[in-house]
Amino acid sequence: MNNYLSFQIHGGADDAGGVAETVASLLAFIEGLSTQGPGEIFTSIMPGVSGMENIHPLLVHFPIAFLTAFFALDMVGTLAKKAQWRSVAGWFLYFGTVAAGFTVIAGFIAANTVEHGQNVHAIMERHEHFGVSVLSLATLLSVWRLKSGGLIEAGANTLFLILSALLCLLLSLGADLGGLMVYKYGVAVKAVPVPEGGYSHDHMDAHDHADMDEHTDMHDPSGMNADIDAPEHEHTGIHDPHDGGHDHTH
Image (cartoon, rainbow, N blue to C red; front, side):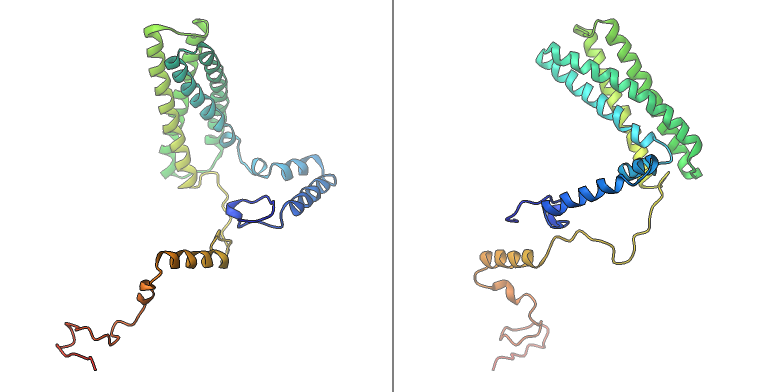
């Protein structure tokens, strides 16, 4: 463990001098922005968004977050009989439905503009069907909730929760296909080849190896494991069934 305060990620492997250097880098970044135009400033601050061919991958996170939170909070609120929790869950549903609408629109635009092969087209079609299904069901649940004054009671609420669970299932299946297209087939991805000798997050430095050796010695005080790498045919005086029955003990 480091004995000084520093901002660290990846278990400390990227430590670059602690707080002072981090603050200096931030100030240098801000100073650099003052010399750039509006378009360059946006690219510097949001390089990921500016590099996208479409905003569908950016928008898709919002319906996933809102609708999942809606179902979880509505279920817990129903079981705990907390009307206020269920009221908050309703707002998550409304926000999620709006977000799903924008996401589906962006998805249709992306499907017509992003290059993809025949092996991906069928997956993309199913992904679109799941997206439209999520939007349709979320809209239905939102209208039902609004017409009921924000809360649904008794047996009707049981059906409402079942449909909400179905909504989350469709959401998960659609998201899975989206991830498949990106991470396996690289749709809309401009991958940069990793150069030889690329960076590797290897946290086992010399100090870690020393600690490991010390830890091993503590659990093996007799040193029995030290002979693991000993030559196979060392003359130990023990009878070897493969040496023709001769005893090499002198």
